[in-house]
Figure 1 (spheres, rainbow, N blue to C red):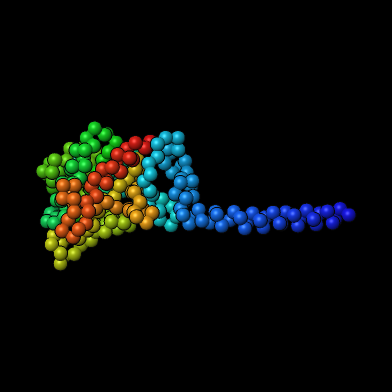
Figure 2: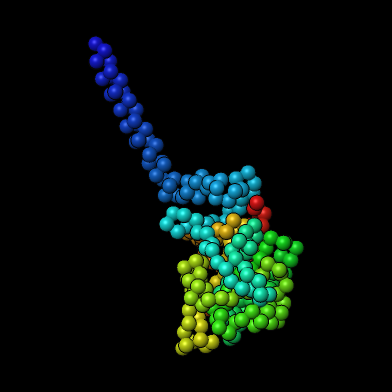
Length: 251
């Protein structure tokens, strides 16, 4: 008699599990597909150390399921100081790759960055990381003169030089921002005109695009005043400023 009761119990449990699977599993799958879980509920305390404070709606750039974090680096800046990624810990900062002899996009990029610098003059936890892709020419002295010429005054804006292969690896792999030599183009080097935005904990952040994915980068060439370029591309400096402000509010 007890054996029959046990069999009935097992049948009942199996039936409940089956009903649960039919009703709830599709709903869970739909939520995962809609990124409800991965974008909000899976944001761990260890990711930002800010679970009790303000966290903006800016997204993380994920590589193989993990948030993309700035790799370690160490270079010499325009003042002759050794600057590493640790010097930017606790700061929101913008990343660019450029070179001082650039005859095309770099002057426009850095004028835009100076404007951003001046917008956040009162914030000690804002900075810029500029890496030259022509370190043979861009010595410390050359970078210092360039900084003075452009009105770079933020003590957290470091124009850095060092080993070229290391810089190119940092650009192409570390930040996924293209940079390379090309003797056939004007200036001898080609690179992206994009900026990357980094939060206080070293994670790459951006707003989402129209498809719900992170934009990853911000166009750095077109100014706010221009609004659009000759190709009809819209400026993103105003967008970048808004997102810097959001990250500065995070702990």
